[in-house]
Length: 255
Image (cartoon, rainbow, N blue to C red):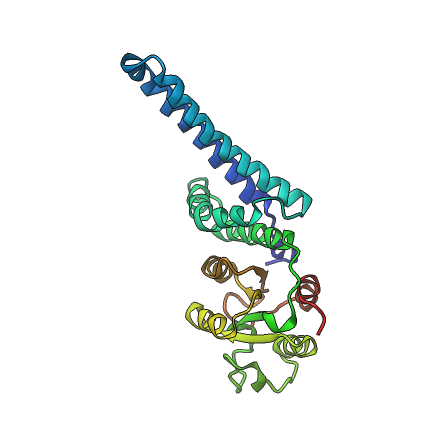
């Protein structure tokens, strides 16, 4: 993957959501038009009432999409942004993934777009939490495969030899007084979150793990940072340390 691959764009996800909304509007029109002839035979006002109901649903769909786009464009927490995030994470994501599959769009690209969209919605909340309430969660593949010290769960075992990015991340976490942990999978990640009870998480992982982690952790605010994989998936991966520092500067108060 090139550097550009690690700068996901949220516009793809938004475009697909716009397409899905248009599809909903077309279906709403058909739902009104087709039975309206039969409804008129029952009562002349029924087609109008039914049409009004469908128009209200259509306005809610368009209004939600418009509010989402405004939140992303302005970077501000507008009215119902948390509810919009919930709708995107819980309901829109599976539909968009399936729509993207039908259109032949790569799943990783869609997941990158979803992560970028989630990050922007979290940033719009302008969160600033104390270090004790923040957590950095890492995948085990950031540690070198042939390292003799297994630091899963307890990064304090790292001897800071500097051969992988763990030492730099551990130093950043120590300087700022932030908890940092390594998880080998979703089950351990959930256990770490339950044990430490953070109010903000910076998670580093691949597209698949970040997507499932963001969805599983909702409503906790999670900023996802993609790892670099020059040696292929799940093997001796890397992280851009400045990207981690920037996220922490934005959302974690100084120690």
